[in-house]
Image 1 (cartoon, helix red, strand yellow):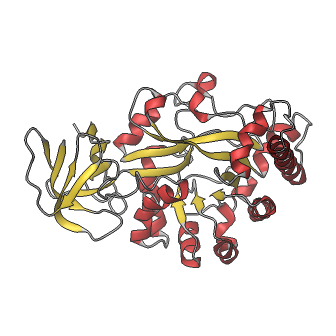
Image 2 (cartoon, helix red, strand yellow):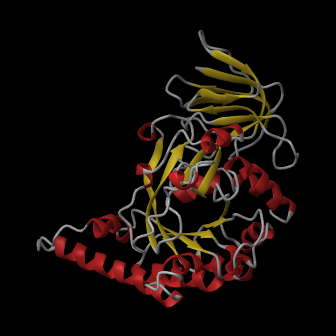
Image 3 (cartoon, rainbow, N blue to C red):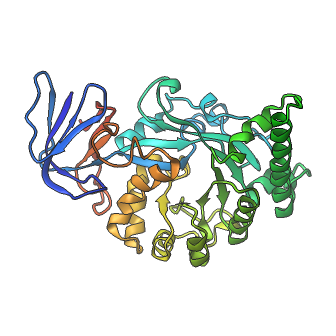
Length: 384
């Protein structure tokens, strides 16, 4: 057991406890949150010293463990750039738990991340939501598969059409390839249901959960027209969808609010490295939130280091996102959008014992960082 005492408990859902305790059981689940909890026999006790205590942060879109840090080509295991349609790829087969990006993220207060293939392919494969503490991916999974990655716009066009002179060369080509895959999956499903025994097709098998709305499309889309294209396709085939990056979201916020899909905004840090990033700005999250869109903030790590997720939320708050929504955008909002809020994203009894004790509020204080990080009731980082 682990008992955190004397902390300023910010559960994200529910009222702040100015001075409270969190008890995590031997099963790694939060057992109790209260102003005072007597220490059970044999329990490890941590005195938070009045510091802020929050749930571990949740990253909704990154490539940590697949695009390994400091390795180069050998660590680039996130884009299978030989075929623009690769739904059969699974993130869990590429994630390297020993990538230093995972430990750095824990030191930055990020405990859960949805990580997976990049955006070279029109359909890239499935993402996985994982805990960032561990040495074997099979034991780190929160949800796998968590989503099916698809990409619109510049990236698939550049990776195939620009140099390879093959489809897709245009945005029409991107949309057509995705539609063709969805139509083929529909027919494949129908043939199976009718007992026609179609030849096994691993790509189409991987897409069946998408058509059944068991798995959302995780759509890389920056420009407004690409965002509207993927919404159009999702409606045509009655699919679940998240809008990842959503860089032009500030230009079409009212439209997106009416559509009702969650937006994963970012990475907003750094320069505008390509044409479709012209609207890149930290104000986007606040504009979308005020229009009525459920917003999560993302780093797209390693584009922005994953440990800087709280810093990015702080910049969004500085540029118009309300403070409480800044915290929700890196905790409960991504957890809900990813379908893992029953386990992570807030401090509640019965949820996973993932929490962070901060030296200062990282959304308001430059230099605010994790003093201690706990995952499943185990201390995985402690400031030296």
